[in-house]
Length: 416
Ligand SMILES: [Zn+2]
Image (tube, rainbow, N blue to C red; front, side, top):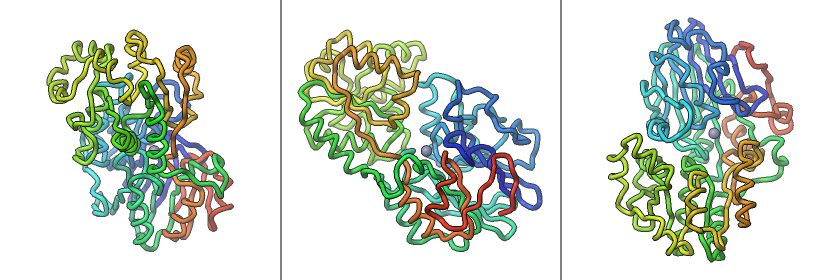
């Protein structure tokens, strides 16, 4: 079995690698958009034979989890190629796509992962392991062929709400791993001895700010970061606040298919449709969708009267409504995503807006990725013969943490 990292040996984002069996059958794992991509252009598609559907040696594309830097280029490949991923992850992408700008079409065709249940695909035996990550329904993936075993960590952590999944994998690891393709997002971002707050600590920090805020609290996060939405919801419950969501968030939460995750019809939740979304609903005739989430709908006048008891899951789409309704008196803006996005040029309008409103910005966030110490624990538990860096800007830091590191360049084919 051979592997070629097409993108990711020295880079975070745009993750993609190919696995080739001795008989020439192939799998592609992840097909992500590079972090520095300008738009979702086909020019970013790695040069892999058969992505146009013309080569049946390419058996499938496997997507570890629904983050853009792992699936973003799927819209550019043939619909004839099966896309294998988590069922809930697929559903989230399908349901979210109409709300988002650009073409995020996700081929619906293909098997769904079932955690720890192996399946055969040509010469390959594939076993997915559900794992803790900020992306929902995320997997590590074991691939066996030709008597060799390759384990792809995917993106993972052990300080989120599903930490038990990673702990379980480490307690009962698959045996005899030849190569561990190990993500290293946090290497170089924090020191090797530093760690991240847990999602539970984030919940406590949020609750403290909610209690102290006398106006509307805005929390800016991705609705698809389900762990974070749960932390925000729990902090609301603790402090007697109502969580106000929009239709996009309601649809994403519903798409998880998980009844334990906050839903638009729960009593502590309100649905407010921002004006721009109201126009979108009318234009796209999403009336059935709206009807399904109507139970707790409120209008701007209600939001005005309960602003001091409310936490708005903020999206930039809300900005005009908040301006017009004077909702920002004594408001607080909590930024709850990676600080790197905040610094991006495309977010200049948001920075200007917050400054103009003269409301405080508070950052409350934790990483979706394991700390260096967490990566070390993971590698020690899986005890592979060799470790190959992927999804990192700092492959040169791996030998500080691991023995038997093997480096490969993007585009090189090598034996497992
Ligand atoms: Zn991710």
